[in-house]
Length: 398
Ligand SMILES: *Cc1c(COP(=O)(O)O)cnc(C)c1O
Image (tube, rainbow, N blue to C red; front, side):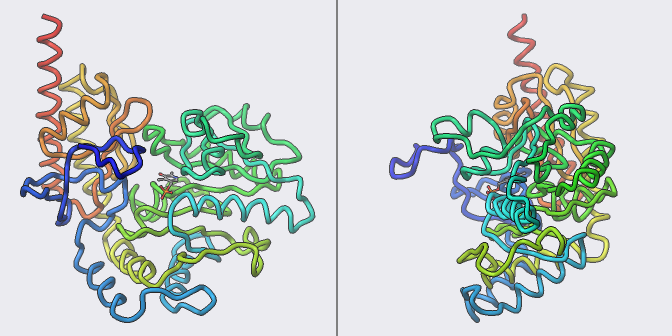
């Protein structure tokens, strides 16, 4: 039963997990589920990863919290490592993805303001986008269902259809500050933006003096088989929002930027109480130890291939259930022919978790440490779920 003392904002499954081990979650009655949702692409290193647990315990015994009034060595170290491994020169730490986007939006607007162009505050976004649930990020995402009833839409977000270059060109005006895009739409249904399109965005930004912002909250930190998804395209942004996988389950995010893009962000212009907290930073550094470790991204790509082949086989065998397989690396989508909720439920009955998304898609976002054997086990469970749905369909039509 739904707990009455909680806000009714979530439609929760009646599952109570009390423990996790790698790619597995265990309920209070001891039932084991294969967790291919990873808390929506969060537990990148698996549940109860010993290296992360040790880092958190170690920091917990030293100091939990320090204000950003003081220097925080683990924060400096993580920023330096992120800068070294990416396009960025500067990092601002947040507590969540939406806050990383808020920082990205403020950084872009402030950049133009500091250059004497306060009128350049508009940001162009794409239909189907998801950038978070704050007042500004629901306006950026542009989805009516998330904005309804929350007062006037925050100003300065102009949306164009997904992948529509001509509409994008037409939307750029004297007031445009930046373009904001997820290299692969997550909530929108694992819709991959083509490398060519990302290159066009870079060209447009350079031609018009705009900043390019990538939302890699879901795609980042090894999820697609590169440290960040945009690396597949060879294009680099000016600003990037990161969260989810970077904390491995400890809640934090980051806004990364080039020194030029961050040039308007002076002392006092932005702030946070918890952002860059020592506990979060200790875990973040431990996550990077894993993800940037020797051979790790190769492992992600190798296991992704096992998934790809297995899922392609299921699509061929169950055409009435599965329409299409999408995605990159371990950010995979099954576009269903049955209602996506039915497939999620059938999978849950086989003790495997996936995450529903837009466009009638079920996301598979396993912990990146998933092994080839665990991938095959997962595919066998999805196969049983699809078999069940297909035989139900036949019964119905008979
Ligand atoms: C999850 C997500 C967000 C929001 O992150 P929160 O931590 O929930 O605020 C923003 N952008 C993308 C692409 C996401 O997947």
